[in-house]
Every structure is written in C-alpha cells, then in structure tokens.
Length: 65
Length: 256
Image (tube, rainbow over all chains, first blue to last red):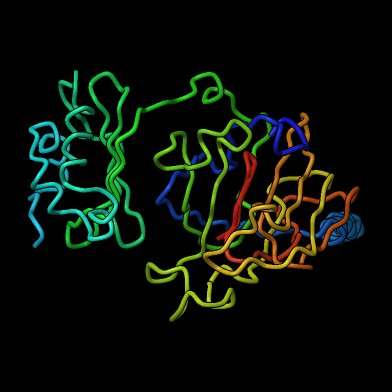
C-alpha cells in the first residue's frame, strides 16, 4: 500500500524476492530462516575473531619455515 | 439427472454453441436452486451476443476442483467455471472482464517475502477478480489470502472450531524490514463461517517499509501479536500467530 490507512491507500502489486508472483491455486514455500540481529552480530564478531587468530598462526608458520 | 460435457476444456465452445440445457444439467443442485433453466438460457443468450469465440485464459487446480476462465475474442467478457472431480459445475460466473492497466503496471519498489513459514496455498491472489476477489477494490487490489492445506483440506475432520484448521496458531513473520505503525489486537477470534462485519480485517498489523510502502497483515489470533507501534522489525521476524487465514493487502496478507 502507499498509505498506512489501508482503507484509503492504494494497493501496489507486490514484487517478491524469489521473482515469482503467485496466483490463486499456487502453493508458496517460504523456507528463509530468520536471523536475530544479535546472532548476526555475534556471527560477524566471530568472523573477526577468526581473522585476528589467523594473524599469529600465520606468523608462527612464517618462523616455522 | 446430470448431463455430460465431455472435455471440460471445450466448455467455451459448448457455451457459444448454445448447448444451454446440456450445460444446465451439469450444474450442481445448489446452482439449480439459485437459477432456473429459463433464466439461465436468457442470461447466457444475452451474454453470448457479439462473441465470435471464447479462449481459455486460466486453468488452475483449486483444492478438489479445477477452475477455468474463458475470455471472449475482445477480452471484454469472462466465463469462470469451477468443475469438481466428476466434471460437475459447482460455480459458474458470467461477468464483464475488467482490468486496471495503470495499477497493474505499478509494482512495489521493495521486494518482499510471504509472511509465513513452510507451505501455504494461495486461496485468492492475482490480477483479475476471478482469481482474486480483492481485485475490484483499489485499496486491496493485489492482496493475497493464504491458507494452510493438507491433503486438499484446510481442516482436520471438521470445520467446527478454529483449532481444527491447519492455519490456526501458525507463526506469522514480517514480510520485510520496517517499523510497526499500527497494531490492532484483542478482537475476539472469528468462528469459521462467520465474519465480524464491523471489523472484517480482525486483528492486524501495518508495517512501514522503505520507500513509503506499507504492508498490512490481517487475521491475527487474539492477543497473539508480539510487536508494538514504533518497534523496528526485520524480515522473517516472528510478529504473531494467525487465526484461520492470512491476508496480505498489497501488501495485504490474509490468513485462512
């Protein structure tokens, strides 16, 4: 809709992320998993930790050879 | 005594060939109670005026029936027929075919997902009134009514009581990132087959998305809404539970 007032707003044809526009008789399947913003942040910070840990490992490998 | 139409896909030609009595014999008892043969013949003859041929526009499985739509050569008239498994006509509509080109070509800037998880059946949805009863109304033209179905049925054993419907108490999620701008909760759940004419949308949420687009999701279970006005939600976030049908009003999702 183009208004928060659903009785007076205009309906807009929906673009869906999967590129399909279902119609009557279709079966839709939504399997996308929701990721909590906190978990997402943790995932990102873990990636950073992994990256930081890689540095001493790389240095250790350098001296080993 | 029921008649026989042979191939259901030939209905358009049979109708144009004025085989009205044969068609009438293939209609359900309920249809025949609504309209007499004489009335049907008169209506059909008038409808066929000026038509050169009918062509199938849609052929869709609809639960245990098949829904066909034929359009005339001018794409001005539509015949909508629901055949059951015995090729009996359960519903037949003869109506002008009206579309709204301007709004049909206006799409949302943002892209969305359906506000549900798992498999759902599109009960109403699409860009004409024969497959989407919302279509004639500008404010809900591209709405979807969604229902959960198993083995062709939306309920277990009986339609008595909301908790017999597969959709009942299912999770409803945000169709996109946004901010909650309206919440109506606390309305009593409608009993199947009955509607609160003062509040046909039941409990609902309106979400403001980017680009001044809004989604309305209707028919939440009483007191199940988990978000408040002003709260920011993310796509896929659980926002409540549905009664027996989900509506997305263009966004409008209606849950069944």
